[in-house]
Length: 273
Image (cartoon, rainbow, N blue to C red; front, side, top):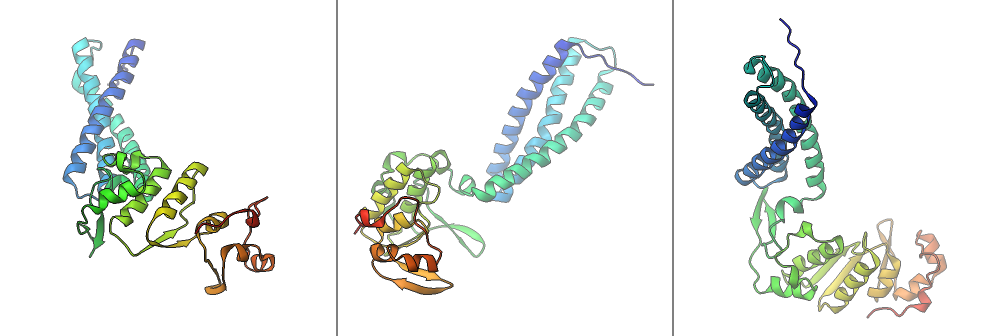
């Protein structure tokens, strides 16, 4: 025998509200619980998000069915209503779980700091040794001094992913400085920074009492910070000399496909020491 259920407009509103509240509460609780017990790695976060989404939809359906039972809005046996609704919504939950896991997996793949660095800037640096993450050797009071050196001492208790991109770049520099290196190696340090953050980072780099080795295609930045550049072309050193001299050599620049920004004249800039 086939039964057709009639859902009044009010019931539809209850269903939407129920789905919004129950799925949020259940998925959050399941996700947080699994993240605490699973190993702290990216695959665990992805698996926890899948399970949370998968379980939250049937949970909302159970809550909705119970409200139906209490409200007495149907004369069909409650077991039959529950079976029909859970069966359909389980498929919906599975689809949402797959989409959620794929989305979360993509995010943590490009933002691993969300997994490993979300407990504040004072958290010890972790290194991968033999396939396992281990705490780096303690270097007190270097971490506090490093944060102060980049102007981030007031944000020591903030998780890195809560910071703007420019401040995260400064924290990355502090992470290395905390280990008291003799040489600081930077790869495209000015990339994706707004003008203000770019200038602030340049001020920090100039203030450091450490040798800086910088790889960059940002020629004005190189002129500002690097007194001596090496031009690498096809894996060999093509030029070596004062930054201003090399940037004014038009033949050298053309030969190695180097271009200055429109309107930028290196002769008008005082090179950083």
